[in-house]
Length: 358
Image 1 (tube, rainbow, N blue to C red):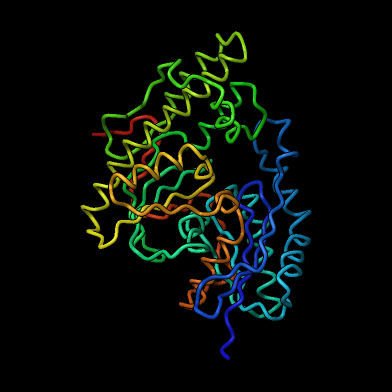
Image 2: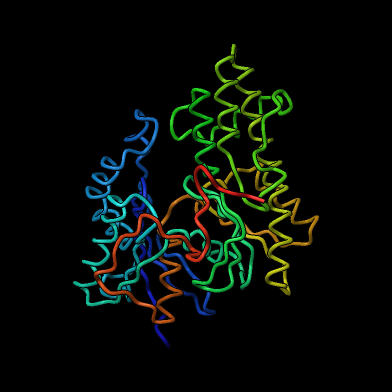
C-alpha cells in the first residue's frame, strides 16, 4: 500500500495561532486529521483591534503547544510528517515570522521539505477540503484584509479581475461595528444586529457602483456610517443602521459579482461555471444566501468553505502544502516573510488617492 503524504500546516499571519495535519484518503481526496486554532480575541479586545507586538508575543508563547496538540490529535507521530508548510505572507511581519521560523526549524530538524505558503492561496483553495472543485473557477475573496475577484486557473495561477481600492470588506464590517459600540471583533455581530432593524431606514452610499468594473470601494460607506452614528438616539436606531449597512453591502456585491461573472466568462470561457466565496466574511449568512441566489439566476455552481474554515486556519495552509508537495514545489530555508504578497503579482496596485477608474 502506497503511503499517503502527511503535511503539517502552520498559520500565524495575524491573530490566530494555528496548526493542522492533513493527508489524503484512498481516493486521493484531502483528509483533515487535526485543525487547532488559538484565537487572541481576549488579548486585543480592549484595544479595539489587533496590536502586532502583542499578537507576535502570543504566537511565540503558544506555537510549540499548538503544533504539539495538532500532532497529538491527528493520531500520527512527528516522524511520519512528510513536509512542513508555513504561511509566509501576506500579513503582519512580526506575526508571520513566528510561524515561518518555527516551520523552518522543524523542517530542518526532521530533515523534511519546507513549503512557504501564500495565506490568500490557502483561502482560495480551502473549499477543496470538503467539495469537488476543478479549475478554472471564479473566486471572491472577502476578509479583514482583502476583497477581490480572481480567476483561478490552476495552482499558483491567478488573474485578478477586481479589487477594493481602499478598505477590505471585513475591515468595513469591523469599523462599522465599532461605531455602533460593538466590541472587537464586531464584524460578525453586524449580521445579528441587522435582524432587528429596518434595512430601508438609511440610504447609504454605494461607492463606484456604476463605474470601475468589478472593482470595489467601501471607505465612503464607512464614512457615511460614521456621520449617521453620531445621531443615534436609541437601540432601534443602531439596529436600523446595522440593517441598512448589511443590505447596502449585499446590493454592492450583487452588482459587482454579476460584472465579475461576465468578465470571467469572457476571459476563461469555462465549460462549467463555478463561483467560490472564501475568507472570513464568507461566513456571513445573508451574503451567502444572496450570492447563492445570484448563482442560481446566472447558472453558476456556488461553493463556500465550511464556516469553521472561512477565518484564518492552518488546514487550508496544510492543503496548499499537500498540493505543492505532490508537485515537489519546495522552498529553501531562507525564504523570507512577505507582508505584501498578491496572488496575481502582475496586477496593478489599485489603492489610495489618485486611483483612476473607468
